[in-house]
Image (cartoon, rainbow, N blue to C red; front, top):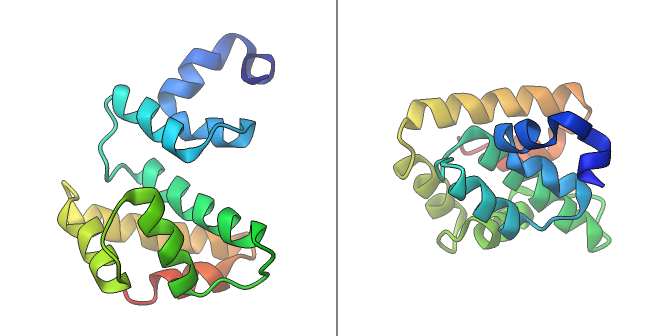
Length: 130
């Protein structure tokens, strides 16, 4: 199905962003494995964005229509394998980043992107401590 969609660009598209496979039913753990095999860092902006989106989808699939930052923190900790509280989660994302400023700037830009899509409330809640 992926090759049908991307056709001749399949390999280059997956190398560019392996988390695109999430849209085709590949789970986050497998996308993570592929991305690390391709040399992406754990703090790669595409990984952080994909984990935030996956956390939201996981939470919404449980039947909820609202996600607080604490709700999403639970999913993010599972997806990213980081400590058990939101302060440690955010600290870990920054600490293990090769460029903490870049991660903060990226997450703020993701917030603006989601605001444009009408998803600002959950994203603002998630990033309010940043």
